[in-house]
Length: 140
Image (cartoon, rainbow, N blue to C red; front, top):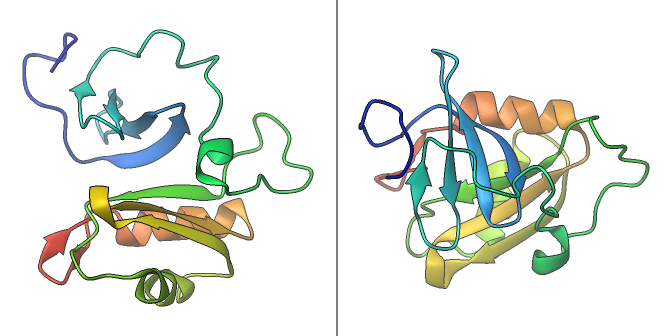
């Protein structure tokens, strides 16, 4: 782990943003940390270029919401540590109970996926409810 958060490995919190290959997490104590969703690297230090990196929408094929202005929030969520055997249909069913799902993308080889909701409020409800949930014996 890079950075200076007291030497402890960053874990927990809730996802508050994704830019390039980095996901940002906020902890209840006010600190933030970053996880590279490609390599799994976790750091307390904001990665260089994080503020100017493009979102991963173009890479994953998930289109942005119409009229989504900068600063208005995001309804596309990165879901890490997906349990083995959870296919795209099951993934959609799991997350559909929290709101209108616009699209899903599952990368089972690396055990992560994305779910896009019709609104930022729906996405926030999922973050508040499912962050850290245990599904099929695996913590998301």
